[in-house]
Length: 261
Ligand code: ADP
Ligand code: MG
Image 1 (cartoon, rainbow, N blue to C red):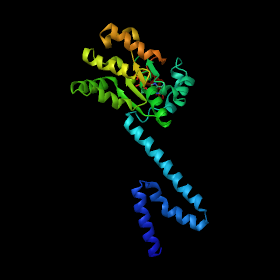
Image 2: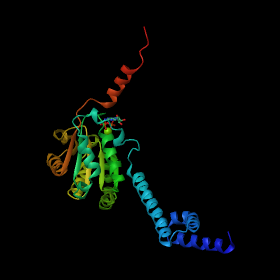
Image 3: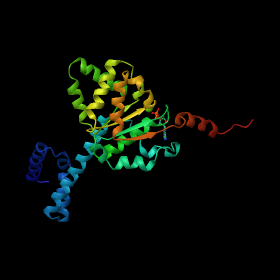
């Protein structure tokens, strides 16, 4: 390469750095060389460079969203066995994963069932699909979130903390039933539910039906108001089957090669 060409590349590199175009910066030299070699029209070169930059920008954005989401990386729809939960329609879950307009309406998803039936798996899988569709999702154990909000309330920054959660199109509250029965805690949870009502979506998993949520919210009027808001625009997935964990353990035992006796 001539001295002049090296100098031009150097200057180009600096400008692309200032413009925050790292992909073009990385590919410019090779693509320009290819363009010269193959006699591309200038328009084609420009388009190729910008296409690469846009594609990588989108990948980086999705990676950021996945990293901030707190979702288990391996709980996906592709490895969820719908046959194990006949009461849940695969088509209905696929519709929630692909048609994301319900998030614009602040609609909710509620998953009920005893421990081990795949509530957390399914809600994580839905979260991943929504991230793939360009949405922002945050998964939190409900107890951890309540503690975080309670700490914020003590420091007089509950509104700021709620505003931070507002950035997420979907907030997943995993295991609502495990929240401790404590007035201060449950009222922050209620405030969160009220704040997001008809505005931003919630997905809630619980191993107790509504009839037992009095255990979580203490005050009957607050329980009613919380249930009312959650249910108003919601998809309810009932998962009343035997624990998948226990079933697969039993399956494992029965599938194990039998040693002859
Ligand atoms: P829950 O949240 O209802 O207690 P989990 O989602 O934690 O249940 O499921 C328990 C374990 O079983 C997890 O490892 C999960 O990936 C797996 N599992 C449960 N249901 C299914 C399913 N239908 N298909 C695939 N794996 C499942
Ligand atoms: Mg769970």
